[in-house]
Image (tube, rainbow, N blue to C red; front, side, top):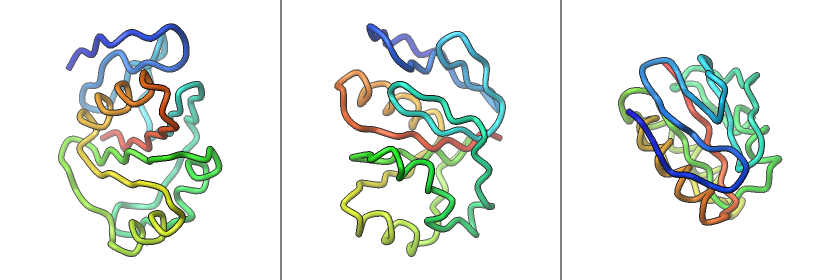
Length: 122
């Protein structure tokens, strides 16, 4: 999937294909957290079934308005407790497949929203 949304500066996801994310001029092949101006490539979350709020500490520290959680090639949902814990902090949490999360991140970042994408790559 090729993405073409342009932005004056900051992080832009150029494309996503199975296991690879093209962000600005960089190829990323591991789980990653993105903000409008930061790439956090050392994110090592637990398996989807074992995710907890501590796995999202790096995302939460960025003071997001919403976290877009990309779950890989298909949309899968984490435990309800994780979603509840994050939303209790007044932060939106949206789960979608990683391709949709990439598109959504680009749109929200271009709108200068405080968005964080937490993306699982398979």
